[in-house]
Every structure is written in structure tokens, then in C-alpha cells.
Length: 160
Image (cartoon, rainbow, N blue to C red; front, side):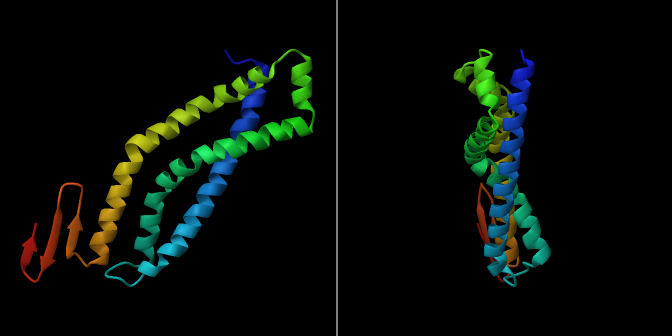
């Protein structure tokens, strides 16, 4: 199933895609954190709460930027192989261009499936939970919002 050449090309592409994914996720998380600093002092939002909120947003950021990371990482990895003439050597021993692309995709398909599952099952729940906690903390418990209802508190009265 996986030959030596498949593993070599796939490993290079996978490492590059993972590095680009980490860099894009980190930069976006940092920018989001700086942007959300404006919430400090609203209600009971403090630095520790804001850090926890941003960490709950990381899976969504990762899923959002993963397709871009695959595109950039694949291009960089294959470009690196072309720069060192390894693609020419692969083609000279009989591996077609399609075979080279399939070698890189064989390794990436499980990673793509994992990211797809994260985006489908984990991200919606974690993002909703983070937003609910932010709304609750920002309003000092006066507003509680979840996917089923909205609760407002004024004095001793609740509005559902």
C-alpha cells in the first residue's frame, strides 16, 4: 500500500502541512486574543477567563485554516522537492506526476478525515459553550444564552 517513495513524499508533505497549520493557527489565535482584549473588565471577564475562551476557539481556527494550510504546505513541500531535483529523480524512475500527487494525498487523507471530524463534532459544541460562557461572564450572570433558550435576569425576575 505504502511504498518507500510514497512514505518519503508523503512525509515531506505532511510535515510541511502540519508546520503551516501550526503557524497559521498560532498567528490567528494571537490576533484573536489581542482583538478580544477589549472584553477585559466587562462583567466578570478577566485575563484568565479570556485565555480560556480563546483556547476554546482554537479547534475552530484550526479547522478554518486547515484547507489553506494543505494548499500552502503541499505547494511548499513539492516545491522543496523540485528545488533539490528529487521530483525529477522520481519521474526518471517512472513515477508519474499523478503518482507523486497521490503519494502525498495518501498520507494526508487520514489527517483530513480527523480535521473533518473535529470540525463536524467538536467545534460546534466547544464554540457554543465558549460563547455561552462569554455572554454569561460579560453580563455578570444577567444573560444566559444556550442553543435552546435565552434567559434574562433583571432584579429578582427572569424573562425566558
